[in-house]
Amino acid sequence: MPKMKTHRGAAKRFKKTGSGKVVRHKQGMGHLLSSKSRKRKRRLKQIAVVEGGQLANIKKITEL
Image (cartoon, rainbow, N blue to C red):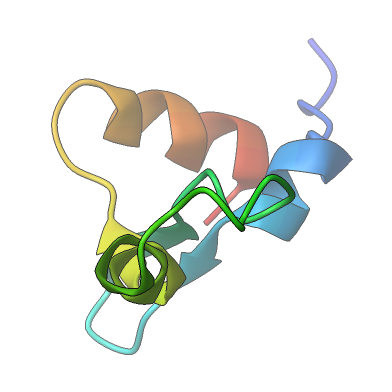
């Protein structure tokens, strides 16, 4: 069976930290920002750690 190809769209969205955790950006900062509060936008800028059931799927398709 051939090697599995990296899902390029997912590979651009997820990064691996030095300690081996997988991080992602939060959604909601693309547009329609005028109706969102400063506090909300500030929290949306932060990165989030991927946990739980999605972690195995992401590692498989992105080869992290």
